[in-house]
Amino acid sequence: MNGGPSIIRRPTSEKSNTELTNSLRANFLASKLASTNNNGYGNGNGNGLSNGLESSESLSAHHSKWTSRDGDTIYIPTIDFAISGLLEERSEYDITVKLFFLPSTRSSESSSHTQEAISLVLRELHVPSIDLLIVSFQGVSFDADDDEDEDVEDDQNQETEHLNDMIETWRTLEKLHTKGVVAQIGLAEFGSERLKKFLPSTNVRPSVDQINVRDCCVVPKSLILYAKQENIELLTHNDCTNILPKGTVRELLGSGDQGAHLLAGLEELSGEVEPQWVVKYTAVVRDRGVIENKGYFAMAELQP
Image 1: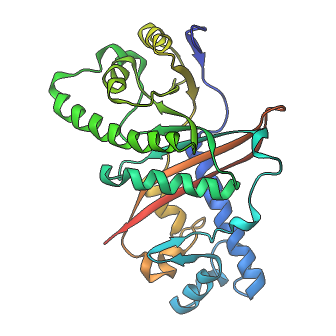
Image 2: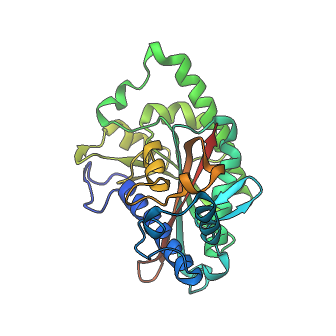
C-alpha cells in the first residue's frame, strides 16, 4: 500500500474458514471413497460406511486404509508427498505461506509448531524455500477504531506477557529467514502501537503487516505513516483470526451427515480435540499471476 488510498474495500472471495472447512471435508470424502472403492467397504455415498452399521472393529479397519500413523501422530488423510509438487522450476513461483496460531496453542510449543508447519509445506510443494511467511498470533485482531488506544493500562501486564510470547515465536521465523528457508517474514493484525512495542525486540524486521478490514474501513493514518516510516508493506486479507474453531473440528471428524466418522471409528481419537494451528500456502506463477497450487494443513491435539 505504502502511501496509497486509505479506503480499502473487502474482496468478495470466500471467507478462509469456509474455504478451509470445505477443503478438509472434500479431502476426507475423496480419501474415504478411494479406499472404499479399492477395498470393498461401504456404499460409496460418503456419509458413513454402509449406512454407519459396521462394528467398531470394521470402522477401525476401514479408517486405517485412508489414515496413517507415525508415532503418536495420526495423519487424516494419509499424505502422499510423492504425488505432490509444482509443475515448473522453483524460480517461476511466488510462494506465500500464512501460519495461524489458534486459541488452544501453548506459547511454549509455538516454535516446534512453526517448524512442523513449514516442513509440511516444503515437502508438499517439493521446494527448499518460500518467499513470504506471515504469522497470525492467537488473540491478536486488528480494529481500526482501536489503533490509537491499544495501550490499555489495566491489561498492561497481560499485554507484556503476550508480547514476550510473540517475540519468542518470532525468533523461530528469524532463524528460518537466516537459513534461507524463508525470504521474507511478516505479521498479521498489528496496529501502529503494537508495532512500536514489537519492532525494537526484533533482529529481522517484518516486511509485511497484513490487516483485516471488515467490510469497508479507513486504515488509520497513524498506521499508514508508521508502516511507511519503517518500510513495512501494508496488505489486506479476508482471513478469520480463529480459522478453525474447536467445534468445527469435532464436526469434521464426527458422526454427523458430513463428518468423517473418525471419532467413533478410532478409539485413539477419544478425548477433547483442540486445534493448534493452520497453515495456508499459495504458489503463484510469477509471469502469469495464476495460482497453480493452494492448500492447507491443520494440526490438532487430543486432550484426555
